[in-house]
Length: 479
Image (tube, rainbow, N blue to C red; front, side):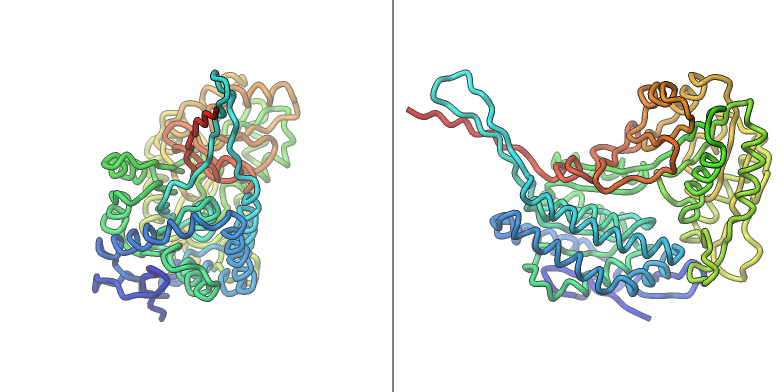
């Protein structure tokens, strides 16, 4: 069993807390590793190290900083199988999807390194003669990144890569549920020549370490990927120092399936979007609205598809579609929500309970629900599990109204072969992303950002990088 230390100021150091947290394999419930419980002192040391290192780091040219991102990408590719296995073990992500996450993370470091020569300011016309107005882009300082357990490695890169290339230093807090891959990465980059303090990793609970990091006056920006509740706590903490926040929070993504949709495409995309990583993905379809004239046919095909979903150990050689839930708490939450939906009148077509095929692990059956009403909890609150509630609609405006009836606004989708219809829906849907005739999954060059309670700011692409920059305007009068 492995035991990790904190990575602060370029060294692995013992936590000042004697408490350790167990990291479990969700498929087998075996203990994989111990991580530090973490302390306020650990967080303060990491923030001090990052602040001290930031001046020298920002003084490098952007292209010099980018070379370290390329080195990180290279290290990931050299250890891609090891990292994928580590990821699959700690969070029950099927090995194929785990490998995709590792490989895309390497691409993400390279992609952000490519922005080094594209960070641009502006020259603004002055009202005065003999004056130039220059708008410069500058780093914010120390970036604090709070990572989730569902895509821990990729989201770590989402926070590290743009912050470093723009001249910020960084302190990352991994999830206590899935920290191993990130901490192994910290070991792998020890020898790439990165200056001490530029990148720090501190394990610990949100209530102790997370709170200390986000309340620190040394933080220039706090980036969180997590729940609405966690986002609210971050905003409260950040308010003390008026620290900038970038938040990707929950989702309750609707998928609208029109009568003129390609049925097979819609069925495959919706089911794939719901079962990826056992439904524990914030941007994937959480509720489906199907036009009444094709409802029965759609449900028949989705039921067949959900029944055929292979649920096995993440390392199974049978190429399973999904595996265990990430934790006992997550399993119990999903089970409770389905039971409550049944009490509210929902009908279970497929699944509807914990899997009985496993002696250990947190497995839940792919579940399809009908006889759904819009005001049910299962249609309003994020499930974060392989559960698909489906409702009928009569008109497109009705479907759009139902889709928008949510406190969340992360992603959405529509399936139709009618161009005018899909473009109208894209204009009306109140979500940061809309997918047309495809599954819910974003691109690294796009911009992943939620509306309403799904977040503030965003990640990826040019606009994600600019989250880590602030502006300075210089008025240059000459004679």
